[in-house]
Length: 324
Image (cartoon, rainbow, N blue to C red):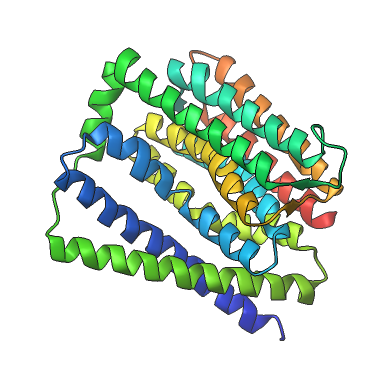
């Protein structure tokens, strides 16, 4: 019974995070439209960062409140869920076509990002205790900036057809200034309250359940903070727009590592439990399986059957993490 109230407040916090992120993205996008920014710029910046906002807010609050153990677990769990469950469910709804740009840019960047935090967390560059410090955080942020710069270059110079698609998909009516300000304010309030509730009650649940903070971040928190990506990808799959589904997942995974962990480690060093190397290996395996299913079968697609395999893989990942 002692866990019911913290669990309820945790759920309320997740709801506030999701709505807050949505309101903030809507308000920021409206300002982008008013400022005459192109749909391409809005899509690759505001919308792309929007789906990673819950992870960012939870990590920042957790680090400020002295629970940095949640941070790495949250990102590893979210990224694994993105690949196995979200891509799996989306492709079961409608087979996903993987663009050449994703194969050339996003999938390799995902491997590089995962390798980077693996080396940093295991002190490959230093001989000290297992942490990701502020220097390594700056390196992650610079790598993230490099990825975004590469994305802009490819999208604007080498993929005009994707620009046309993005302009069509991201086009929205301009909101009034009053509604824009209201959505921005509600977004900030929702993110603040959500981050406060999630970080505080996740720590309480970890103590009540006898679990480490990193395990709670890996399972409960990671699942909930990935809901925006899940909803976005399912809606895209239902509309048979598979390019958005996989682009959303791959882009979010890369930003989670480079930007979210980068910012988090600037606040406080992020401790790494060596047992989490097992989950990092699973994340590497998830990336490898995704790449394998893309190149098997006809064309560069993730079929419904392959989506089922990915989804079952996530069930196995959760059971393994909770058992450990």
